[in-house]
Length: 126
View (tube, rainbow, N blue to C red):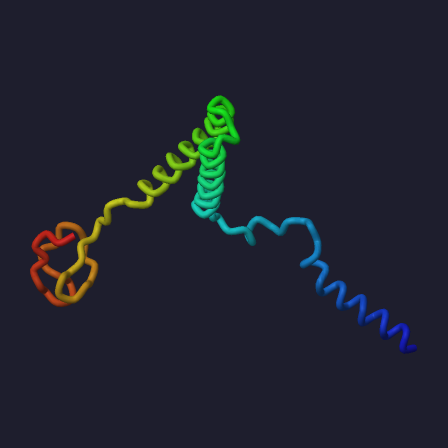
């Protein structure tokens, strides 16, 4: 009788921890859309690799031809990642269609002359 209970307890514990030890990826709605973070991590890794290559070249362990052969593709990938990062950053910086009151901080529609909360003149604050 105790052996059956022990087996059931072990099975329950394994069933509870099975999702943690499975190698199968979870559904897409559990994954974050962290493309900018991934881009930053890739750029840091590439920068470290380029620094290592440069140190090996400077110390004489690598010829100039070897350095250029290895560093060329890495720097090209780095430039493409930087362009993607700059493109996404500029897309996020869209100009606001609201202007804020300097007296109370309320957001007012673009072109409003007076604040809707405190009636202070806005005077072109953006």
